[in-house]
Picture 1 (cartoon, helix red, strand yellow):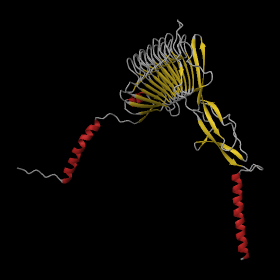
Picture 2 (picture 1 turned 45 degrees about the horizontal axis):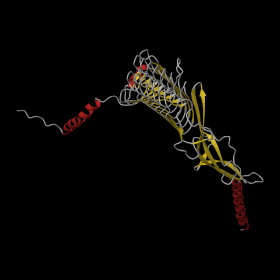
Picture 3 (picture 1 turned 30 degrees about the horizontal axis):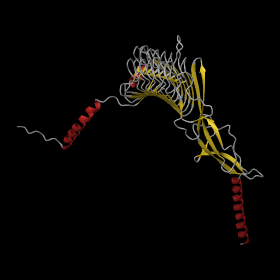
Picture 4 (picture 1 turned 90 degrees about the vertical axis):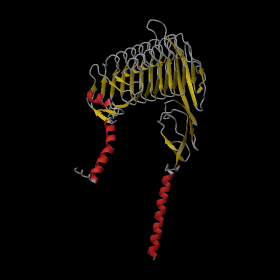
Length: 472
């Protein structure tokens, strides 16, 4: 019997290493492609990049989808799209397909390094960005660029497809123009579903609901969801009988709307055949006003025919209208017009006030609410106005400088830091004057005089030393 050769120690070591690596390598080969930054210049490159979970996709050229094509973020995945100064056009998606599908469990972030333009038009029964037929919208975040999103029939521009809820939409910048298809909201729910959550903190947003859908909020017959605006310029217009911000036509309630800043114009839609309409902010026709809270900024809310500026739509009832500030003398005590919500002041923060003026437009109501803030000016030994009242978003550039004998005004200070008077005022603030000493007769500053005195002192000492050395 022939003896087997004994393997060398090196061979044994290599075999053991290969066995140890076999399992992890087998597992790795079964994993999907890893997240990365993908620079794309063609439609095929773009769709391939969207197949990789967690990718950041950066446009490298203008791209237009072919007829019937669309993009989609897979369920449960997160994607980022950087327009990068280029144009992406998806305007002929197939029926039931969003231009960019973002289902309820997914997230899409749209940015625009150096600008860029996105045009997204959903197919029949599908959102421009969000859900398809029966699908709710996921999480959509927009931070820049020019974004135009249009829903197909029965769907929202950004949010739910037909029968789909609005999901979560956050806008922090850019120019965003959104339109809902018939029965769908612009931002929020598709037909027969509610508005989801919409948060706007910057940019310029124009949201126009389709017939019977809210500008921001519910699709036909559904409530407005949750809307919070802290900055930017927002123009929200409801479709026929729907609220500008709030419920859709057919009994959609107002949901919950909070405005903390920015410039907001909300207009309810009126029927083209009947004298009925939706509230500026609140319910669609037959819908209750919901809860509206204002703590800052400027709000102009105009109801459609027979509807409140802030409150219920035609045949609806008012809700809660909480203005958190100190009302000016003669300020309106309700949201304006029929079915208006009565105004309350659940909180009056120090230094926060507001004006509120109501009027009628046709047979609908209107209210304009402007917040203003107390700016306390501490002259720090000088004399000045003491305090001024500034409207939200305006500046102190027109305020006269304080004066002080023997000193030149050297600007305002806030909490130890220099304050730029061109900064928009968004709340109460205390500013302290800073001063530079001057010589009254010459206008020369005290600091300069000290510097000259120091130089002269040093020169004198040098002369004394030179004289001593000469005598020596």
